[in-house]
Length: 219
Length: 241
Ligand SMILES: Nc1ncnc2c1ncn2[C@@H]1O[C@H](COP(=O)(O)OP(=O)(O)O)[C@@H](O)[C@H]1O
Ligand SMILES: [Mg+2]
Image 1 (cartoon, rainbow over the protein chains, first blue to last red):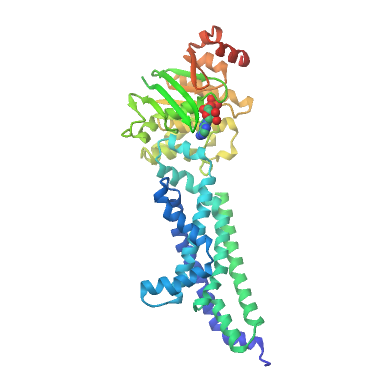
Image 2 (cartoon, protein in one colour; image 1 turned 90 degrees about the vertical axis):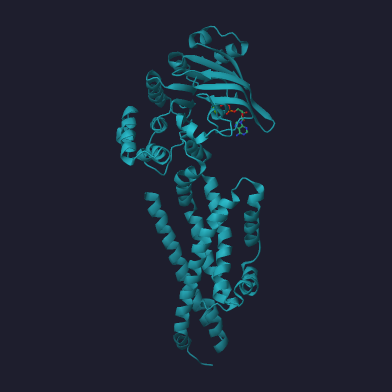
């Protein structure tokens, strides 16, 4: 063999760079869509009527109770072709990560909302606020602060889990590491390289969440 | 008649907590509710502003049956202020914002007007200098005075107090009772659940003794404290007086 690892990395640098951007993109997509959808599902799950609540409960149960990898396969080979009449790893990747993230975010948010003392709602209602106003002005602002740390953990998991979509040829970091490894029949160089990049991404995320937390705490 | 409670029953599952409550509160009257823990005092107050749905019977606020499906409970609650044992201030807002929130969001009062009103009320409860403080930095007595100011900001026609001084250190009880006394003197209609018998005697127009989900006895403070008619009232008073 005798190929210098640095030469291989240099050769793959453009791919690793675009792979990093894709990983960031997939993660951001999953975080943004997952949070929006997750909030919606969270409120769905808090509906009092059992029948109306059922679909949201099923959603959360399914996406938390089955492997993300299997969900990715179902969405890539089943759902996306069904809707778009062709497969597309990037679209399937974003959808799978968002749908999965939404289930976790929904639970994090629900726990956050329910951790706020019942007396807060009662005080708000006793002042004449309706349920929506109490939620919006009193409960949610407090819940958001409380869910920030667990949300941060979910976001970090999402960055790591995005590596699974390499399996459907979405051109993110792990995909290019596999390509690199296959071309040169090597293991250490590609996987340690992307491990390092993943670490930078997750540490950056936890730094950002920490800062946001501190800023909200001092407000 | 400000508040009329008629044949009120309230059950939690199997547990019948209010068994047959009848109570009238006149305009500007101060009714003090006393009774042992678990007798249903809080539940009664909470039924009066529908924080608990009533099982049967009626509660009328200024003649409106609040359990009627067509009654606008949010509108009615604007007229019925409530003060809780645990204060329930909003910890993410300054004292001033706590007081301004409901007037601006519910009554759509302008920010300027709400602010002026908040400062006025803060002055009345003796805490003008705390306008920009957060609730966590206040003592219990200060918190409860803010909670009273917050309720008053909606300009309610009547106020419910659920053991407003029970969570306070003894040295802070007085400052809260003073605010309530002033409120009574200004003509507020009040229903006060409390263990402060001195307050009941001095400020109350009528004292209601509850036990086991019933109103056992009610009378003018002097009469009730000095000449209780029922055995259960006598037993309770002998313990607390
Ligand atoms: N939300 C509730 N669910 C079930 N039981 C309740 C609830 N609230 C009060 N109770 C019960 O009702 C009874 C009366 O409570 P409460 O009205 O708080 O009494 P008091 O204020 O006189 O101490 C108690 O036995 C209490 O356990
Ligand atoms: Mg009580």
